[in-house]
Amino acid sequence: MVLVGLALLLWGAQWAAMASGLSVVRPNMAADSGMVTRIMKGAGTFTFVWWRSTLEAALGFALIPKWRAKGRYDVAAVAVAVVSAVCVAFLILLMAGAGTYGTCTYPTCWPAPWDGIILAAPYFAGLVTLTVMACFADRIPLWVRCLSPTAVYLVGTVLLVLVWDRWLLPFFAGPPPW
Image (cartoon, rainbow, N blue to C red; front, side):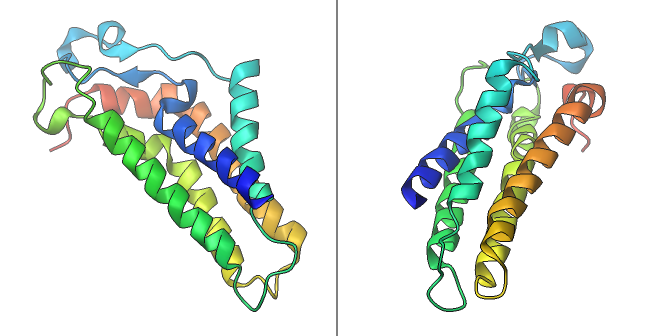
């Protein structure tokens, strides 16, 4: 079960680092070139493919906690959370420096990697919840250890999708704040 959960979490890392179907900003277009030309339209949210991919990643959080942790800590869950966090951080940096954009308009290629970090925030929140639950494995029932990280990830992802186009995407499409 842990290996299946790890595979699904790594799928979720890829899903989080690749914008989860949301629109993203092209760093090689200036902010005054207009929102239409600066934005790369995403594949869409709340579609069948979006829900399937999001629920697959969420299932990974539910499959990680072990039935009976040996001792106070669930070491396997902590190890999986660390590996997943490293993988998603690597993928965010890889996507930010992929060089597919050509010459960047702003120094440090704004908004990369900051938009990727925000897009992966629900994933990181789920990993933190998984780690905290694993540190108290002998005191927290299994169903709570399984459902809490899953719920944090799902609620965070839905909230991110709801605020992305209206508030966050225009911020990232503008010039850097510094």
